[in-house]
Length: 367
Image (cartoon, rainbow, N blue to C red; front, side):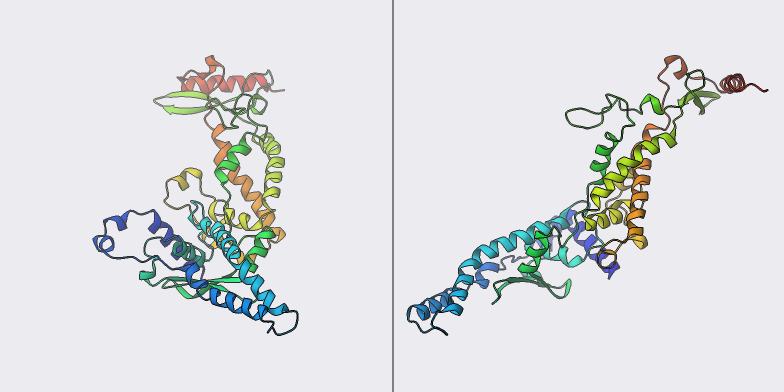
């Protein structure tokens, strides 16, 4: 089933993003019926039932002298239209998540199919074999049923069940956090960047963003401790060295707090793991792909893994920090040019290495 979820979810996503159907002459020339008459069919007999109930009450021919049953039925009929609007709004607010760029394709594909039917996506018309029906139940709840070629069985959602879940803060579809925005924000909050690295109004990084000087390694005399790199043709240059352990100690409490906040919505944590964290791909790698790398065989299952056990929470914490360090902090600790202009010039590689060796001996004289 997992492979089927991924396959169909990706198919629908790619179909919606593709322009191919616009160049399909057969599709363009054919008729497509998207008029499911959802509300018309649901309420086609309610007028007669309403009139019948009013007549029974007026004629005092109810099941009991108080007309309790009939008044209850009448009340449900009068409340039904607003319930239908609320129900469809709730469904729409959930199903639209399947259109998100970072939607986790490990989720049940039926939601993406239902969204495609309800929003009239190409190839999901009534003329393509799809249908959606709304039913008014005797208990006052309502049921929506989706049918079609990609659905082996009718896909059913009940209004009361959905409303209860939403009221408790749980959705039927997991929304994937925007890890890129979250980590860029976090980068400005962890306390390792120098002043002026972020725009105070927007919180975004500035082009001058850099690691604070307190995290740059220095020699005993206070001068910067450089690493020499070979830039070719016998030439070299200095780059800054950073106290990575100190940086990690500074960052860790902020990461822990961030993840603790995320865990208040465990279904979103599963989505973040499946789309970003589990695969441990780089941001640049994801940007080069039409679809973010999927966690594959290490993906977490919404039915089997929720609620999350402590070992998975701990693993998410560790991997979240690794993702942050590798994709967002590392760029500020690699190949950074010295701030001292005299130390930033290109030099003869062999001469530079000899000078570095002499400086090491000077700082660490033999006893």
